[in-house]
Length: 323
Image (cartoon, rainbow, N blue to C red; front, side):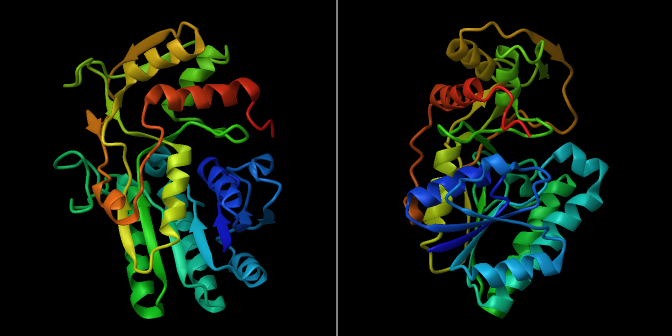
């Protein structure tokens, strides 16, 4: 298939592009490179530099590529920033997404895979989080993604645009060639590994008195290759659907740090701080539906394997992509 990937120069998008190419697909990447990196784009893909908020950019690119399907990763995704600058999140994640959908309708593209988030649910009533739970986001980031999910339902009904929305929490790990390099790094695993690389003095733990076995928050981590496989499986669906992605378990902050120490052979100094407002003790997504309907089976569920792949990439690329 010919696949058009927005945000294909970012962390998740770049590895999905690599996996699509390995599976024999033809890929066009559309990215404005504000968050992504040119070096993160597989050389076998075509790169179009453009901005989703500029209608002419995305319409021209879609007309040029004329893909069979679109994968959409181009979103701002920092929860804290969304609380400070909600306009940025609604403009990019909603208005930019609308421009993308309109370009698809204009060219006649009928298949869409959306990289959504479990942040659309907000604090859950129960765990694991499945697709039946009410969606009550507590920040503009989660709200912007939920708004776009609702828009997708209407574009299906009115334009026949079939979509799959995949919701998940923490992507982690790397492939041999591509890994995680954010200009503003908020994710736990790369920040812990930066300490092992000597680039940070310590790692901060926000809250040590949660009702969890070791007192620290528990989160759901998915290997980036397993995530890419779910997006590729979504290309084969005929009807629109929403799926949550998770490994069924979870790992605490202290367990992540201990595993990073084991994998790297380095001592990771820790600074304990007070809880951050709004951090639930546990966030774990259920994936029974996607496993049952799409046959998705994560291969890298062990957290040490996920961290080993991330560490190997960071050792080879201590300065990330260097741009």
